[in-house]
Image (cartoon, rainbow, N blue to C red):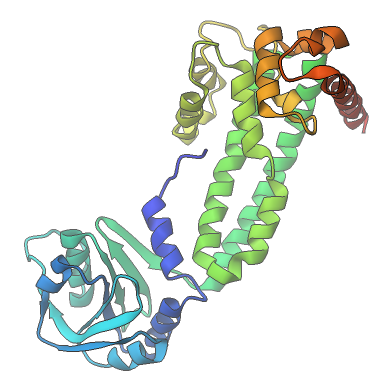
Length: 354
């Protein structure tokens, strides 16, 4: 599984993505140029900061919040966003909380968000922007057309990276069957896969911010990278040193900086290979990745097969009788594994010629 970065921000963006009732209300206030300060939350900490105004306790609707925003004070919504609780209130956060904001509305929003760690939305009257605060997080919501443009640009970049990755992995596939792959080939494949997954993460954030307008982008993304993450995990399982935790290695690779990711030796050390020349070091895969490509072979059977034979080369060279001896295989699966590996090899050779 990918490490969840910016999890809190993604959650906030989902709440106010285009197509939601909350976003419609915010857009109405923005277009009217009245400005506004909205707090999402009705716990005791929030209510302690509320001074004056009047209780509404009415069902939320985009048009109603727009009308209430014409008054100068803040609006308090329930945590589930179903009720407008208070309007025209004064918020009184601690004045010694540091903030770099300039306008009174934004300074108040920033301080309230830091003091009680809740979502506060400031809608600027003059600058015509919506700023969201929560704790130390600050995010300016952008127009859908701007995000859509960036998402399409990121998709084009992703297509180029996937094309390069396909060539690198295609080359590695053939070398694995010939038992000629080097550490350089393996590390390059892992590096290129991780680069692709980082672009995917960026596009997923755009999709989250686009809400119901991001459906087509989401469909294109899924089509481009259907099995990429699975391949990265299986590459690590195939080649990392036996005494290392594959899940931990995957986390370390995800947490690498962009500069570290460009250094093949750095990735090699994480996999457990130190003091070796990448180009000259021949290395054999365990066989997880190739066996996963064969249809209808359960994970338990793959585990047992790899545990018994240790390397892909030994699995390829095994007879039907040797495969039949493995727990969970039997005659039918032994034939499926042999024919599946043969078809994969033929397919990889054909792809190379094309």
